[in-house]
Length: 280
Image 1 (tube, rainbow, N blue to C red):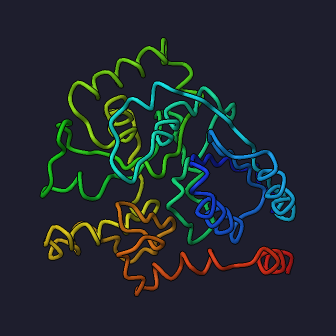
Image 2 (cartoon, helix red, strand yellow; image 1 turned 90 degrees about the vertical axis):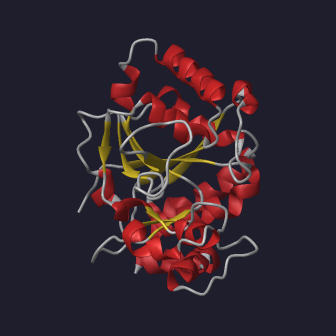
């Protein structure tokens, strides 16, 4: 069966290169004909050339989207969120495709992304999954008073509709200024929620399974909330998001569960093995 290309946008510092490659391998394990874009400020052209030689086996490619947005460096961030995370706010202006799927680099996929990518978002600015913690009845966001708040790690973006917003750049800058005044601490996630509070399509939790919340609940000594906050019913997670501070490659992560070992499966998967699997 022939598919139109999927446009998948990533954004990461050079120090996250291993995680980017692990994510790309997990995508190519299930899908071909993917056009990746990496928004960055410090990757070399040689890095992209090498990865594109590998991606050609999957009828895919990755484009270097090099940006310098100095004003983002002034924004308050938390320890595991760098200023480059704000660059996803610029995606509709720097990626020409009308529809793109944005993925954080602390993610792997667990099946084909076509099911997620083909959601109809023509009437929405974006499709996203609620932030399990901040949309629950147990935790209140520090600056936003809203019933539903999305996690920005997985975003199905209607670039075409974004670009139709009059003075988008001005609205973005005004929202960033408001974010600073109110003392927000969740970076671009706060900014995007402030900007598109009532214009996003809620997607099933399996499309952004925020596994890192389990460590967060342990840390808060509220693990009894796990069934209610983390439940996705009989569904398997299609996108596994190692959000929050404890990630499989970070000291303190126990790496005892299958969902954590799934990350290491793709991390250790050699390119030749993946090529052989897909060709076969």
